[in-house]
Image 1 (cartoon, rainbow, N blue to C red):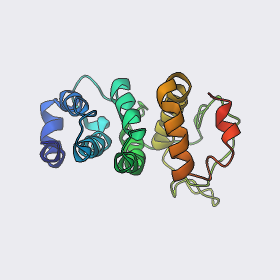
Image 2: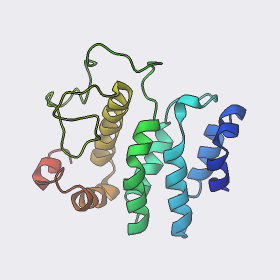
Image 3: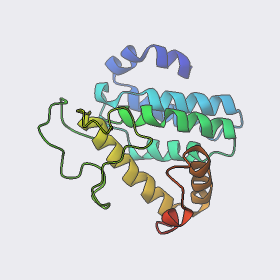
Image 4: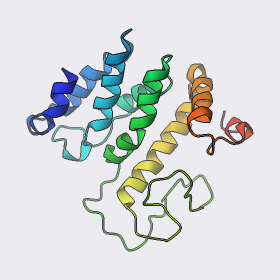
Amino acid sequence: MLIALKSAKELVYQTGIVYDVAKFACENYQDNYFLLRIAVVEYLASIEWAFASSSCTHLPDEIFEIYMHLLADDDQRVRNAAAKHLSLLTENANYNSTPNNIALEEPADYFCSDFPKNSLTIGMSPHYDFLQQPFNFLIAGNLSYILRKMFYILTTSANEKQQVIVYLKTVYPFLCSDYMYFSMFI
């Protein structure tokens, strides 16, 4: 059913049932069948919240938390699918209220206001490069918001944070080259 709804997303957007369908998908995130959990990951990441005509026009917190549970799932296949689709989830989150992509300068809270302002290029999308080419400020804002939420979940969810850190170390070793860096957030 989720695959059918994913292929008929224009109809889902027009009828205003995006949030209800996402909540329905979230009800199955603890199912024993790993393919269903992967379908939930793929569906949640594919929702373009900017086009949602329901009351929610950005990725709701409870849906993001369920996605984080799936990122720390017991099954390696589900974790891989969640990590693979995290960039799509970030792109579609729509946390910024800016209706267009035109900007003359970086927003003040461009990456994470809690961190020193450094231009990160390793492991980022092609929009972040050494050539100083223009990039999508909406995605940068979404990334900033999602990173803040991820660090919050890492510091408050004791039963999952070890799984996520170990998983991040295996998938993104350049981000986790020193475990002590992450331990200061725990």
